[in-house]
Structure formats: C-alpha cells, structure tokens
Amino acid sequence: MELHILKHKQPEPFQQTAFFHRVMKLLEQYHFRLPVLRFVIDLFDKRVMRRIVLDEESDDSESEHDESGPETRANDIKWASMEEG
Image (cartoon, rainbow, N blue to C red; front, top):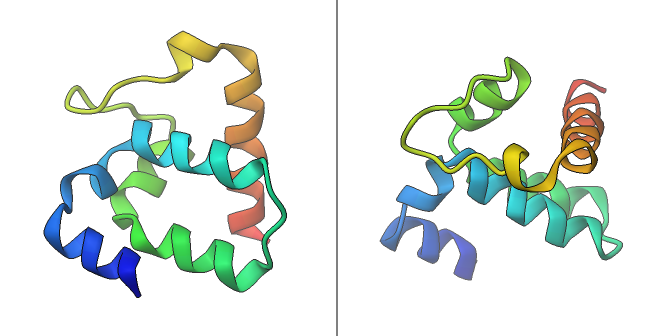
C-alpha cells in the first residue's frame, strides 16, 4: 500500500529502467513469494519492461549495464524469462 503512495507522489523512478534494475537486484537478495514480486513489478510502467525485453535504453534513464557488466545482463534475462512464463 505504501509503495502505491510513493509511486503516486514520485512516478518518475517507476518509469526508468535503471531504477527497475536496482529494485530487481534488491529483490534478488531475498526470498519473496511470487505475488509480492508481481506486485513490485506491476508498480513499474509497462514501457520499462518493453525497453528491457527489447533491449532499448532511453536517454533519460541511466544505463546500469555499463557499470555492472555481464552479471546484470544475465539477471535481466532471468527476470525477462520469468515474466514470459
């Protein structure tokens, strides 16, 4: 519930792929049930997922791929495949 309020007050981060990547890294460090993961993913703008799946980084978002290398790319693929399944 509080995350919805945060999204309402500050929607910009929920439209950025770099923020999505950071949130996924945090979620990956702990074990959450699928409904919780789905809730968090659904907070993000659908265009963020489209950019990640199509590997399109926009100029207005920071690219985290350059900073963290192949490990982040592997995580992106893992999360994208979870969305498909």
